Length: 254
Image (cartoon, rainbow, N blue to C red; front, top):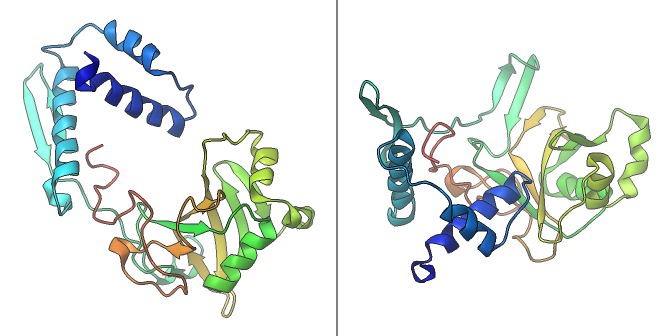
């Protein structure tokens, strides 16, 4: 029954997941055909998990304040039977340290208290790598060492050969290094940056960067702090979509 939009919802959510994980997307009629062949699961763990996930989704769209304690993790074993519900842990907040045991030196968080749900949103168009690094230097006073996108290292300042990459657009560089064509529907790249403070040389840890390369796709260069808190960066602070610190942790509900 197309009037209840069940298949439309399944098609939209399935294709969103497919796009996120680079799986081939399918049209509405293909989804309807696949869903129509699924044997209903009435008394199985699959049915129970579907119900539990649906309950968490209802909380997500109806609750005005999305507190961590409002959500639940679930462990279910129908053979025993055993049902355990627990509160998810809040996301770990990154803070500045006088001595980090990994790099054996001081580390500064930018912004202070950010989590894995936060993103630094930069919308400056499809600029060159030099334009991108200049923006970070100007807005956040960063000296860039390494820029990567997933497993692809786009720039390493310690490699002399990478100096020639500065004049190449970030999107073109991604396609050349990752050997992947950027979809016409894609509006951003997620970049990881290794940097230090340009003044005192202290190592900087910051959220992943959501680089909006299509004009107007995002907001002006901004750092998303925990819960939208202000940051020491010059740019305005706002979390990227889905990046609020009050969101469930990685161990929380889907």
